[in-house]
Image 1 (cartoon, rainbow, N blue to C red):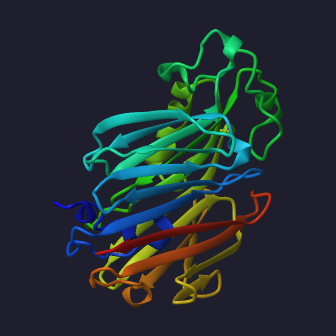
Image 2: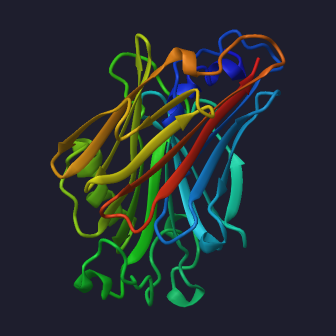
Length: 313
């Protein structure tokens, strides 16, 4: 399998833009690039980009912005069966940026971003302790979800957790979930304990006060194109989607199905194949990009997510 065939379904997986296109015809000169955006309230958004170069090298960039400068991150990589392939850990620079290689067989990822332990915390900055909170800090300020009692706890740290497919599947039943949460917790183990029931239960799951859903989007292949589903707790007061500068548009009054599950608002839209830029001509760059703007009655402001995928054969 050549490097571009590894990314053959990436149009499906980069969330707001998925399509069931195939790169199996790519030659040795092909390359691919995908971008996922994680919206963060009161802060810079997190942008994650994945690259496949013409030589077959795969790597990622994390661009979290200056607000997230000097934070520790951890990305765990998984294969198509959910088996862990390895872990990448590091610290963002003064601009909130870092990068690194992607394992060859990686098809899914799960990341965490959190304040690093302070040097005097006695924990250092070893890889195994990188995302543990400092003894004296991680004090939670008043945000949108945590209660007053929770916010006053001096041992809680603000974790940003996100994940999704690098190489999405167009197999029947595969939803290619991309998610993001803000979690106030004492350590990584507590983060996992809080999020696992939500990730297993899906849309409509009860939320602990310490957890805020920042993004929940799926994309499924359909006989006529792709189905984008977005869901958040509360009620959408604004929702609009644009693929490829007007090739396909939808909003709360047009081209959507809307319903509620367990206090979450769900919006679905079906995107036809004709809206996607797709082809097999060698040397031509094919670009698909989508813009999702949304706000619920629980969000402080509208967030606009720009996701994209481009490739050449």
